[in-house]
Length: 99
Image 1 (cartoon, rainbow, N blue to C red):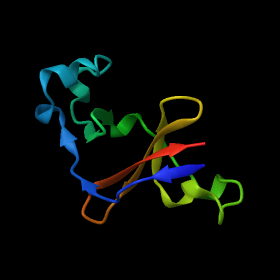
Image 2: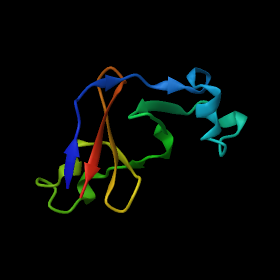
Image 3: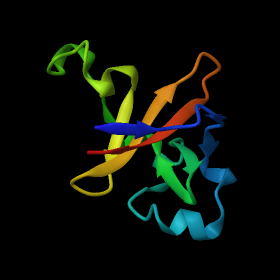
Image 4: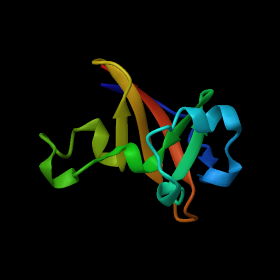
């Protein structure tokens, strides 16, 4: 597995900060769910609450596994997806993975 990132922190966004077009991609959210946080990355907006958490203690070959440095991921195909890492300032660092 290979991860590509520029380690640039990105600000989390709230529902009110999304455009009308971006909100259309989240039609599964109800008005009560609008406290979700989002992040823009590579021309797409990701719902942070929709990502899978990385459980480091459950990874095989923990010391060698590339995902152990990341906090969450979401797949966009069988072989690729996006990873997320929380920063101290509550921003996120995003990257892409390929296998």
